[in-house]
Length: 123
Image (tube, rainbow, N blue to C red; front, top):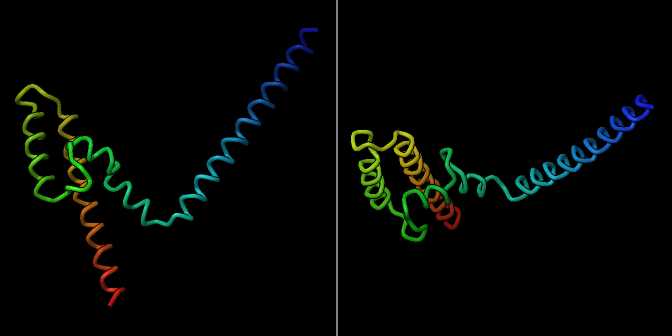
């Protein structure tokens, strides 16, 4: 009797796990297909340098419309100084500020390259 119950539990668990694995695989395949169809440009623009651009904008408290190198540098210098270890804050926060600045700089460079390539194509 216990043997039969144990076999039932094993088969039920295996079928549930199998269905969950199949569903997860389908979702991953669908997401990969959507990413490949949308092209590499949008993936590059949304995540450069390890931190997503939207998160970097939040960290440095900037708007995408007002994004310039001067504003990025000003916010970076201020936040990096405020979060210094000498003032009792953490290296972790300084790292987040640095990587946010790096991501936004790379984003601006990428957008500039796109703009230049479109201008060349239009000629």
